[in-house]
Image (cartoon, rainbow, N blue to C red; front, side):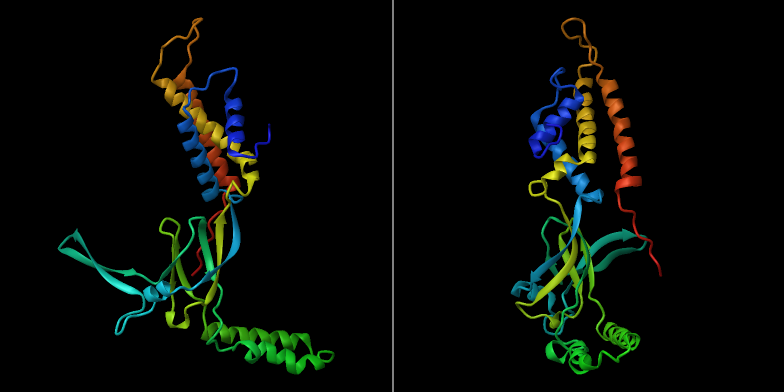
Length: 279
């Protein structure tokens, strides 16, 4: 019972932390469901254990290429939309609305990069790949080949490949759910696969250990306590049988302080700090 493995088990655990069944916790089931969803969302978006880095395989579809490739005489994947704004003497601006994107699942939190699409690369592919040719022609001589020379040659070839065939530029926003590929879409054909290095939010229904996460239990208990206090504030001064009076304001204020401490702990302990920008 102390290690919840499902949604209902987590709810019952938090209610016991608030005093149930000794006390009646005045929170509606609908409110509890909302609080559980909010807690899981907060965990997935901020906690380093709420996501996992995965390679996502995506196959190019005909409608993707229709959006991304340039129409005759136009720019690749770009449409122009006029937005009216009033700033000083200027009242009209134009911005470029890109259509060169592929849709991603809602579970994708962030994207690092896409791996290079092999095909028209300078290093070649298949049996014409330079690495393949080096292995084919020099393998017999590895007993006398200096590894330092081999490493330096490979580094130089990789540098040439990087300069002539750089990584695809991407843009992604979790709320939009679209991965923009700022590249030459003529490199893609229907049926091509791309590999996306991304971060996927853990689904609690598949990874049930999420319900037993120490942070989730602590955070959800505090949010339920806050909701309990908000509900009781409306009945301040009402006495229960036996002369007992629940202080909703005190419960609410205590929950706010607990949430502040939890959020501070998230920033200092559980959240991955943003990387410095160099350049």
